[in-house]
Image 1 (tube, rainbow, N blue to C red):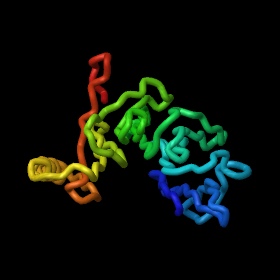
Image 2: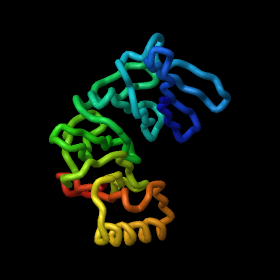
Image 3: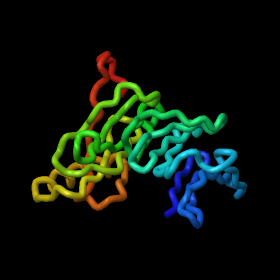
Length: 193
C-alpha cells in the first residue's frame, strides 16, 4: 500500500513499498522530480500516515502504531514526539499535532504540542476513534468513529453538517461516521486555540 501526502505548494511525499514491503520516503515536486528524504533507506521499520506541516518544512508520521516522528526536511533528522500513536495531523498554525493512540485501551484522539510536550486525551467514548482533522481555524477537530450509531447521533451530525456546509466546509466521510470535537481553551485562558 502506498502512503501519500501533499504540501500546500503541491509537493508530494509518498512511501511506496518495495518488493520486500519496506518503504522509502520520496518527495516529488510539481516538475515530477523525485528525491529521497533520506540518503538511504527510510530509518523506520514501517512508516505510515505522512503529513506535511503547514509551512512544508517538516513531516509528521507514525511507525506502525508505535512512535510518532517529526522529520525536518532540510536536515532529514527524525525526532520522536510520542511513544504511541498513529494518524498524526498538524494544526493549521503548526503548533499542535492531533493523533490517535490506544494507550488507554480503545483508540482515542489525543493532542500534543508540536514539540511533543503536553500530550492529552481529547475524547473518551467507548468506541474506536480515527483520522483526526483540524478545521481551518484550528478550533475544531473532526474524526471518524464507525462504531456508534443511532437516530440522536444522526440528528446531531446532521445539524453539524448544516453548520459546516453554511461555512463552506465539506467533510468527505459519510455523516454517520464523523464527529466534531471543539478544541479546549489553553491553560493560560488567552484564547488562540
